[in-house]
Image (cartoon, rainbow, N blue to C red; front, side, top):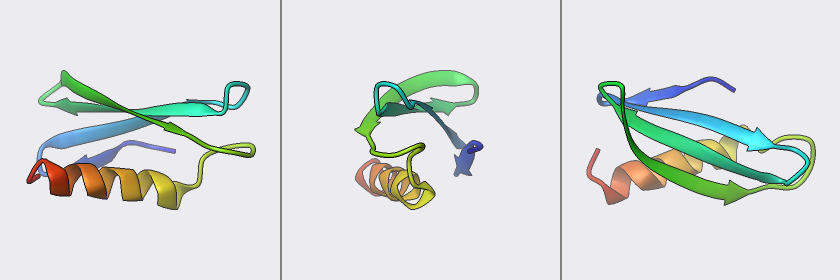
Length: 63
């Protein structure tokens, strides 16, 4: 899974299959802004779930 770019913000997902947890690192102009944590089941998180988390974050922060 690669990074998602939206209006100058970059969302970079990472996850641990063993812990079944992940995070999306939010940055703007190369500077860390926030971490969005999430849980998942299976071998890897679904791309749709990550996109939904990014969409929700963008809506809540008027991005």
